[in-house]
Amino acid sequence: MAKTTTHGINQPSVETILTHTGRHPEQQFGFVNTPVYRGSTILFGTLEELESTKPRYDYGRTGNPSASSVSDLVTVLEGAAGTVLCPSGLSAISTALLSVVQAGDHILITDTAYSPTRRFSDSVLARLGVTVEYYDPRLAGGVAALVTEKTRVIFVESPGSLTFEMQDLRAIVAAAQKSGAYVIVDNSWATPLYHRPLEHGADLVVHAGTKMFVGHSDAMFGTVSASPRAWKALQETHRAMGTCASPDDIFLAARGLRTLALRMERHGAQSVELATWLETQPGVRAVYHPALPSHPDHAIYKRDFSGSGSLFAFLLDPAPRERLAAMLDGLSLFGMGWSWGGYESLLLPIYPQKTRTAVPWHTEGNMLRIHVGLEGVEDLRADLAAGLERYRG
Ligand SMILES: *Cc1c(COP(=O)(O)O)cnc(C)c1O
Image (cartoon, rainbow, N blue to C red; front, top):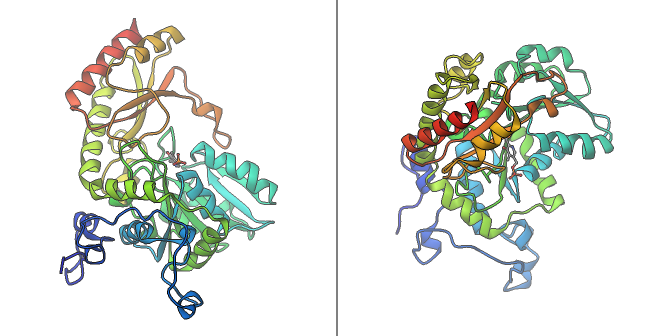
């Protein structure tokens, strides 16, 4: 019989887990990969099976072998009690939040949260009677001063979207204990390869699977993994809301995950290389990349993360919009588009001052966010160098 599990191997490496976990060829005529189980209706042979209280699968929305293959894998990667799959990263975020909040609760969200996380909280959660407060991502243990007996959630994203501040997760977990709050972490940047928030005491970990898990810019996908204390409510909420992921998109996530370690290694190395180079370029005022020793939160990165993501930002000297357009419109390799995590590089202007509320963001000049893809790094550097040249005019 095909060997498809990691049983009997003492502490398999993450590469081995990515390669083997969640596949069951012996149940699929020996085919290596779990096929796309596309379907709503599942047939039962007998009345007893139909009315059994614990069928493995009963209806397309509530699970199928394609979904189990990926949720089992992400559960092992995050060291979780269980994982639910969602049709997008944002859906994973809203599912995680809704699994723990109720009317009258107070929640704390990092000021650097992905802006749709803010929009969901400020609109839907606020309407349901939840008080939403944003905190300085660098508060660390100081967040305890904001925790009241009503505080139900502390939402962490580290490094944060756009500006890449790191958060002291251990200190935040300790502060959360004051009210028994759930700590939710958006771990999309590092992936479970480089950071495992549940090991630091978080309760729920969210991934925009659209990004690094899928890895090829061809599907929308999200996951939420839970600690034992958060798992039951997460599972029930996910089931009640009906936010299931498409089997085709799950298949693309499964395919992407098999090569996640290789891709992350290359994305991370090339992103550090380009960030280091950018720091030396005339006209570059600042580079916001936590893996660089110059980053103010580099110590937290060194302590809690074992590798770098693909994404960072940098700030250019002020220049008119035409110069920015000349830089961006003339790029040959970097694409301009929302999202990140695919094999191809992206570069676009960002405006953190438009979303921040707890700690207003003041910088002069144009800020850009870069996703470093898998192209040859020399070619990417040349494309950027020519772009900077056009920017300087
Ligand atoms: C893109 C992104 C999300 C949302 O994922 P979608 O699949 O686009 O809904 C959440 N968090 C972070 C940090 C992201 O970059």
